Image (cartoon, rainbow, N blue to C red; front, side, top):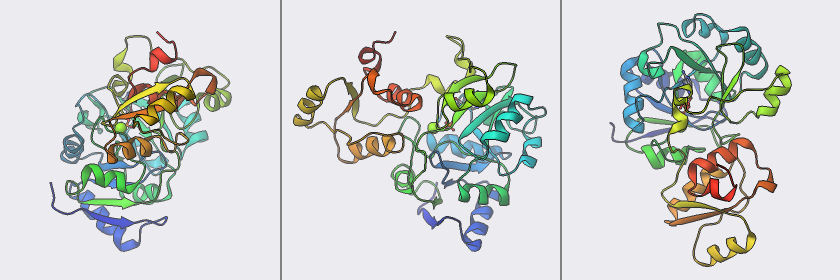
Length: 314
Ligand code: AMP
Ligand code: MG
C-alpha cells in the first residue's frame, strides 16, 4: 500500500501538527495505527467504506468479523445507534472512557461492512489520552487490533511495525498498552446483558456494578460475537500449557520459550518475542489453582493447543 511507514510520537499526546497530518490522512480514506489502553488499533474513518475495506485487506480479516466503532464523546453516539438501551447507558456511564465495548442496535449510517452486516453495532470510548485526542478531533473511527489477522495483538508500536511496516503509512506511538488485552464486549440489546468476550474489565466488576449476573452466549450461537469463533492471538510457535514446574523445566531444557511471569499486560509481547527468537515451542505453566484472570485464560485458550486437556474442560 505504501513504501515507508512514518512513526509519530505521542507522549502522551500528539503535537498539533502531527495531529493535523493524521487527520488529513484519515480524511482521504487512509488508515493509521493508533494507541489505545487495550491494544493498538488500525484506525480508519467509520463512515468511509473504502477506508474500512483497507482495514480488512491490510489485516486479512474475514468479512464477517465486525469492527468496533470508537468514539471520543457521547455526542457521536447518535450517528451510530438509533436507540441504545437503558443498560447501554448505565454501563457507558460507569465504564467509559475505558476498555468496555457495548453492542447496540445499528443506525443505517454505519456501513454494512463495519458491522459484518449484523443489525447491531459495537461501540467503545477508549481512555487512552491520545486515542481520545484523535477521536475528539476527527470523529468516529473503526479500529480493530493493528495486527495481521490471527497474530497476537500489538501492545507496542514496534509490534505494529512487525506486521505493517511498509504497508500502512503511519503508526502513532503512544507507549506500551496499559491493559494489553482486548476490551470486554457486552451485548446490551435485550433485558439481560450478555458477556460476549471477556476482556480488560472483569465480569465481577460489571456484575457487582449492575447487581446482576451476566449471561453467556447460547452454545452454537456463533453469530452472537462473530470474532470469537476464529483462532486468534496465536504466534507462529506452537503454544502448550503445562501443569507442573517439572514439566516446564524439562521443556525449557529442550529449547522451548518459557515466559518469565505471565500477565495480561505481557502475554502478547511474550508470544511475539518467541517468534522473533524463532522458537518453535512456547511452554506456559498454568493450572486451575492459579486462578488466572478470565480474559487471560480466554486468550491462552485461543493461542494454545491443549487448553481443554490441561484444565480438564469439555
Ligand atoms: P476487535 O477484533 O478486538 O476489534 O473486536 C471485534 C470483536 O467485537 C468482533 O470480533 C466481535 O466478536 C465483537 N463485535 C463487533 N461487532 C459486534 C456486533 N455487532 N455484535 C456482536 N459482537 C460484535
Ligand atoms: Mg483483533
